[in-house]
Length: 190
Figure 1 (cartoon, rainbow, N blue to C red):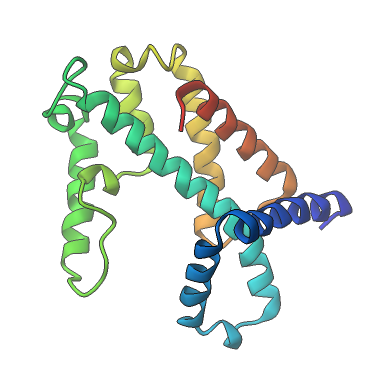
Figure 2: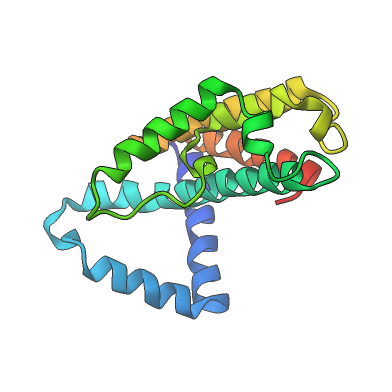
């Protein structure tokens, strides 16, 4: 890792730690309780260090995905836009079936927590992009250029795939991801 990358990761991680220490002591306590339930002491330090650095990126991606799902649901659920039947009316059959299959598979393992209550919780970034693309007319007040939105989702998805499979991103990739998310959040809210 280069000195610049070390500085970027250090800056991001220090910011994350400062936010925990100052503004959200209950979150830090909650994270400590979770950590105590895991065998972290049995794992190699270098693996934990990479994972801890990338945990900040994971948090941003997870929050971004959740905010996009909330945006889609809120927008399409609005009675002046679509209303209660938005899932059937607006989500392509292929995407609905994929979400249903995922939920059905997950429901077979009754002892484990579920992703959520809504079928929308079982979608991926590419599905969210497809829902918005298919329903451009309902989102045009927020997303005047659908190609821009597709580019944002593709950029986030590329980073997501690295993080969700225990990979490590370079500082430039973290910066690129941050810029894409920032652009989206400034345009549509978060």
